[in-house]
Amino acid sequence: MNGAQVERFFATLKAANPSPQTELQYASVFELLTAVLLSAQATDVGVNKATRRLFAVANTPAQILALGVDGLESYIKTIGLYRSKAKHLLQTCQILIDQHGGEVPRSREALEALPGVGRKTANVVLNVAFGEPTMAVDTHIFRVSNRTGLAPGKTPLAVELGLMKRVPTDYLVDAHHWLILHGRYVCQARKPLCEACAVVRECDFGRHLKSSTA
Image 1 (cartoon, rainbow, N blue to C red):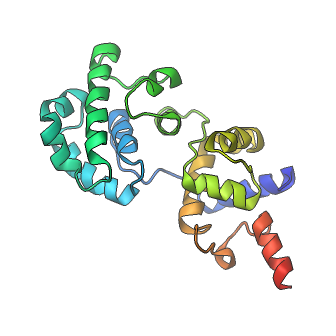
Image 2: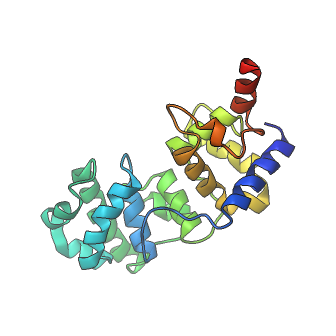
């Protein structure tokens, strides 16, 4: 995918969805951090179902800590790896209170120092909560970037760095939302829906598919 194709790719996605949003439900930066921490190897739908119940009774670091391990686990037990996530969330809440006045920090270094928060989670918080042009590479973005030829890479970090170089500045803040949604609903893992894809003309995979069936 060359530069002109990349520009058309994102212009098309933007025209279809001018203000893309995360599908995780949250009402504060802390709720966002919690939801993203819980979302590893889980669906947004599953996380939202659990956090709706959790946030109704505890949506601050102090309130989460007050639940204790057993109390917290009772709200998130439907989510995969819930025991380790509960442990990490409680540790994170303690650090937020002890070191950050109960607030979520807005630096990558401070975010990645929180238990259960890796580079991807930090990127989501920096982007969604604070509007920074970061790229949170999940399985959808990794697949779309490689399949389309947008930013091929063998690791999530390689794809992230490639995207940061290739995505035009005007699209950077929203780019990871467009790519996640495109991977989730159109450029799916088992069978991409090329016949319903608005950017198939810009995509390496789509062009190769057309040439092979011509």
